[in-house]
Length: 262
Image (cartoon, rainbow, N blue to C red; front, side):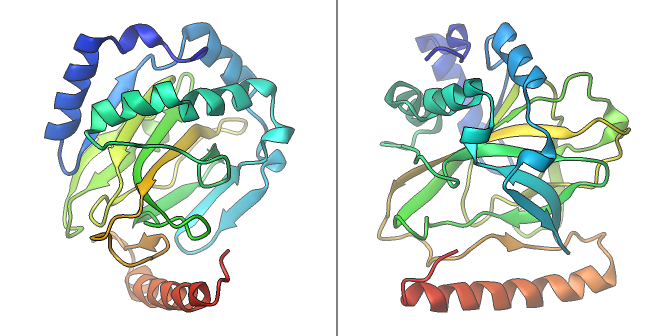
C-alpha cells in the first residue's frame, strides 16, 4: 500500500479501531483522521477532477451530486488509490476492523470512484443497494475519504447517521480533509447529507470504496438504494419519496429477473 498512512494500522491500533467500530451507534462505524499520507492527500486534493469530467450527474427529488468512476479521465494517483483500497492487504485490514471475514472489492463503478457536489448539493437519507446486480455479491461495508480542505462548519455537508426507524439523527460526521469514515451497510444503515451552502469554487469532495462478500443465504432480497424522508422534510417530499422508491425497486427487481440491470 503506497498511499495509505500505514502507521495508523499496527496490531494495537487495529484492535482499537475494531472495538470502536463494534461499539459505535446507531450502527457500526469508525472515523479515522489522517488516513492517507499527508503529501498524498494534498496531491489528490490539488488534482481532484472538476465536476464536468465526471461521467454521472444526479439531480432529482432525493439527490443532487456528481459521481465519477471514469478513472481513465482522472490523474493517475486516483487509480493508485483505488488499487490500494482494493488490495488484498487492505481488504484483510478491513476484515479485521469490521469483523466481517473475506471482504473484497470490485474494479467497476460499484467498487470505487469519486463524489462531488457544488452549492446546494445534497444526498437524502437512504440505505444502499444490497446486492451487486451484475456480480451477485453482497455489499457489506462502505469507505469514504473526504478531500475538503478548510471546510467550515457553516458549509454543512456532515454525513448524517440516523437510527433504524428514521426518527432520530444520532450522529453527524464532519467531512474534514483526509478523514475516512468506514461503516457497515445493511437494512438499517440510514445515512446521507443535507444541502450544502458553499461559496463559488468550493465543492464537497470524497472518494468512495465499497466492499463485498459472497452472497449469504440470509441476505435480504435484492433492492436498489432506498431513500427515506426525514421527519423535518416537506409534506410533498414525504409523500413522493416512498411512492417513487417503491416503484423504482419493484421495476428493478422485475427487470433483474430477465437479466436486465442498470
